[in-house]
Image (cartoon, rainbow, N blue to C red):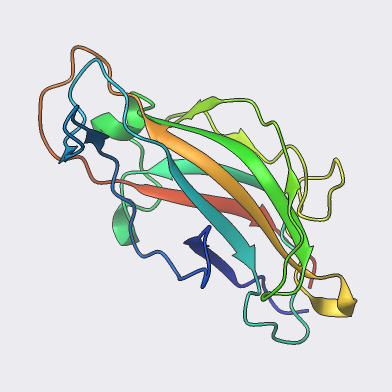
Length: 177
């Protein structure tokens, strides 16, 4: 089997690939505003798919968990920036599914809210196949294109200076070849 093909995507059709996520708040007048210290952002909902394009011979993603890092490339395994070290991002699983990329039946999940960052991660509670295994299936062997849907938000501590904070949300997993 080949490695899982993991993509972060929108939770609404056509389920576009997400290259970035912006956490922001909404003013009483309905305008988007930055998240200020001591407040939380609006919810951002996204899905993580394995093999959305339905390639053959792709492995399931096993023992999945979500963590934040300082960025990509050289920063992909460091956790020193404020957003990461202070656990700004909170996340929980709210749905899962495994069938086809175009008509995926959704199972609602009541995941536990977890602040992720340095030394804390979110372990998937219900797998894409609806089991108690933290797995995202891959379509191989007709087991369905799997996804997990997450709700996330930024909760900025009161003592954090105002500014833009960039970081990466990553899915960590293992697979069997």
